[in-house]
Amino acid sequence: MGKLMLANDDRALLPAELRVTGKRTCEITVHEGRYHQVRRMFAAVSNHVVKLHRSGFGQMELGDLPEGQWRMIDAAAVTKLEK
Image (cartoon, rainbow, N blue to C red; front, side):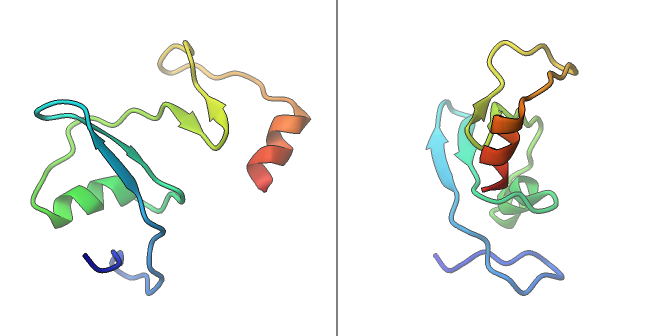
């Protein structure tokens, strides 16, 4: 398959990794996050995303962080995210 391009953006997306976890579920790893990227990728193959869950960001895992909650990160974590 060729590179995926989003509407109004002439830059190709970095490859994503897809792992099927059930009949109607999967895990997808994206290496850059553009506006509604995952929803657009699934729509491109005639699928509709009902629910998304972010399990981590960069090297940080959300772990048992409750939905709708947040936590402070230290300067070392910010430096890692900026790389």
